[in-house]
Image 1 (tube, rainbow, N blue to C red):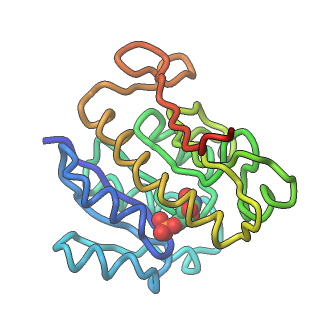
Image 2: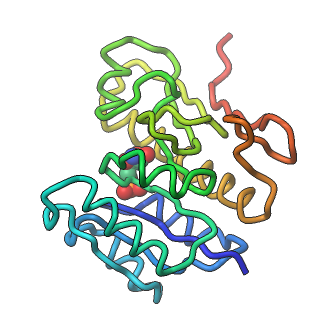
Length: 211
Ligand code: GRF
């Protein structure tokens, strides 16, 4: 049985969607960099081991990264899923887990990497927004894209309404991609995501028909 760990910083709704998906693997632990992350209690209620590695306990980023990596390795995961994990991870950490480290980002990358993606999408006036699952590389939100889901930006949207529409897609997309990985179908090859050896054809588009 493959093993995975989930890294969170807050609410943990993506974590829940992964845990509820019946993935072909065991969630060995949920790890947070914040002791007050609401997702920790949700994971514990499911009987999953929870751990906090508090970034505020470390003066240097590399020391936090090293402690986090040690904690992750203790659970011997085949796959590490960043799910609303809000710390930037250094190159050493990323290289250590490269090829088995995934992230979900709430935009159609490469647009709107970083934070405040929904507000920035609204400010830019884009008509389509969405989410991306990608392999993590040292470039922030810049690793090879595996799958994306797009949603329309609607008249009258505010940050909350747009975020909710995107989040519903996140909850479908991330478990699908995690399943591919745990089934041994997904890999990082020569800097590209490969599903069954091919480029994943995995876009989802939820756009209402316009007459
Ligand atoms: C999600 O939108 C995720 O894509 C982003 O932060 C949010 C976390 O939400 N990185 P949750 O903790 O999974 O509910």
